[in-house]
Image (cartoon, rainbow, N blue to C red):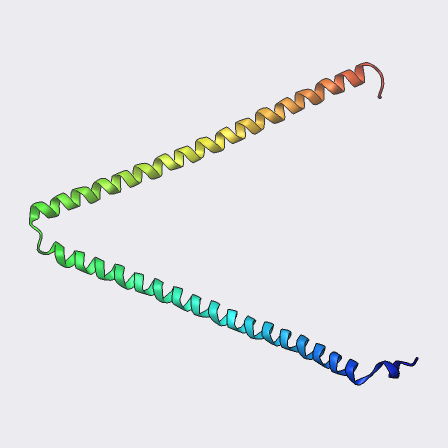
Length: 138
């Protein structure tokens, strides 16, 4: 039986349908990929538009606050200024504490590391002393 004998019309039809099915699957995958990429690009655009809107909204809020401060009495302005100053002082204190905590943590880490290495060094020295005093090496 020769190879040409296997190429019956039914086999050719099945093979052609198989190829078409594979091509359809590849085409669906490619179309889906393009669709997903367009969706991601659109999502990024929407994210940027959202960020812009937030900036505009924040700017508007600041302008509204500025306009509102013109109608406040001197006493109200002083209370608000005192609160802002308290917030600034607390922020500076928090920053100083954060710096101290970080420095102390770093120092503690180095001390633990130093103690660990000192212990390892002592163990090594003891093992060397045992090994060299028994005359096994050297």
